[in-house]
Amino acid sequence: MLEEIFSNSALNIVYGIVLLISFIFAIVSLLGAELGDAVDIDSDIDADSDLDFVNISPFALAMFGAAFGVTGLITSVALGMGPLASLIISFIAGIIIGFVTQYLFLKVLSPTKSSHYSLAEDAVGRNAQVIVTVPVDGIGTIAFDNVSGRVTLGARSITGKAIPTGQPVRIDDVTGRVALVRPLLDKTSPK
Image (tube, rainbow, N blue to C red; front, side):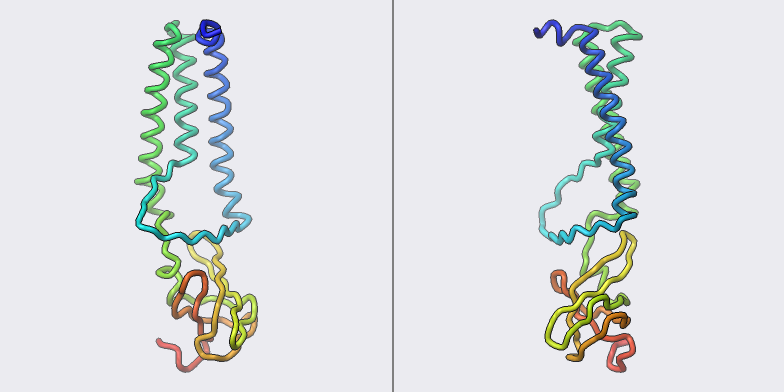
């Protein structure tokens, strides 16, 4: 059984499958990012902690698999290497390409669309529009656009007066996912 798995023909099938799956995964990852922006997916996840998790780019994972598959096929078919040598070289090539892709993702792409997004810092001082009336003693909804897309927040009136749907407002403060807003035409709003 183990000999069959590590035979060149079975290993070549594995390399081919990994290459195909990685190619499809790369396309889906790239299209998924574009489709997510196009259909305005809002996940309402607001987590802020001192822990900084490493975000592995799906594209870097796909590039690891593609490099592993291509290198495996080249070393096995074109260069005629044995299965163990082919696996080792393919794995090393996949790791190198995966790390390079991840580095480019973090250093080139991430600064343009930061994963360390602070809703409060981004929203305060922005103009927004009421999309669900903000009642006197309740919560309505506002929306504004930023670089990552349309943002919706709950909203309370800072003036103690209801703010109707469609009214432009200024965001004075944000606590959690609720903004304190005032109508733009309010004479008491700071300049």
